[in-house]
Length: 378
Ligand code: ADP
Ligand code: MG
Image (cartoon, rainbow, N blue to C red; front, side, top):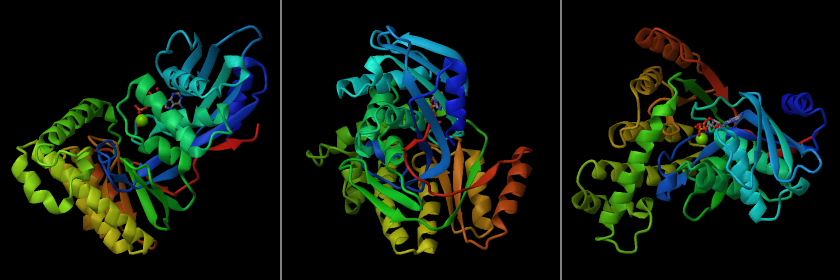
């Protein structure tokens, strides 16, 4: 739905935008905390999207960015080459700087943008990558999806300063309707896998602002684990590259908590590749089992679940769902639940369990794998 962004552009700047593009949020099916460890992930792009409408700034306004979003008040105005904008506009400034290095900034560097979105912010659905990817696509539609993902990743990682992996931007740029994407974060190899299953998203309502601290700590632990494991295997670059059949050796080499973190990453890596094979063969029951195993590993070994997420997963399991697990970094946010197409028990069972435990409801929606970034008609 490009309309809200286009209308906001007209209302704010009094002119019609020249171009627009949209990009989706994402849900990761399996492969949690593997991305920054050089392992595989298996995300899908979701139906919720962020749309960005763009046009040239006022004549003579060199390198000025004016930006507005339905999610934030006010119009930001900043000389983006001289300073990185603050707050949400930093994502846009980062994209402009990256496009500049590719000589791909339009309108002589003077840009107006308007953003509208139905991707909830901070709910673990990657609204930040949707914003950066949609901005890059709207400003430089001739770049290919890989280039768009690269620009958006560097904008968020290098300019905004978020220690994210490449998964979010890659799925937002490369996503395909009715497909999941097996993405190897070290080799950047990407494989589209048909996904025709009924998937529920349960929002625990617990926002993950607290996760930044936990995530940074986990990243530091993984780096430390690699440093120690290099004594055993000097050519080891990524934790996820440690051979799964050498787990006993890994366990001997590391102490807790590094041991538990590393066992999660190495086993989750093998699990994710196996899960992609099962999905390819449409063996949903076995695929679902791996979702439960992944959750258990996140909970016990990586210590990144939360009581709310555990309540949802346990209720899903009791109701006979095929699989369930937290998705996104964890410590709150959302869980996914895989169910049979005819299943009628799981949704009410989760709702009952959640209300009993927390005295409030957890919104449940169905997710459909949708298209990645594309331009929109203005
Ligand atoms: P998420 O898990 O949703 O990606 P992040 O903390 O990584 O959470 O990113 C959220 C940030 O991305 C917001 O605080 C804001 O700076 C930016 N953002 C996301 N969507 C929008 C939007 N529609 N308009 C403006 N800024 C946005
Ligand atoms: Mg994000």
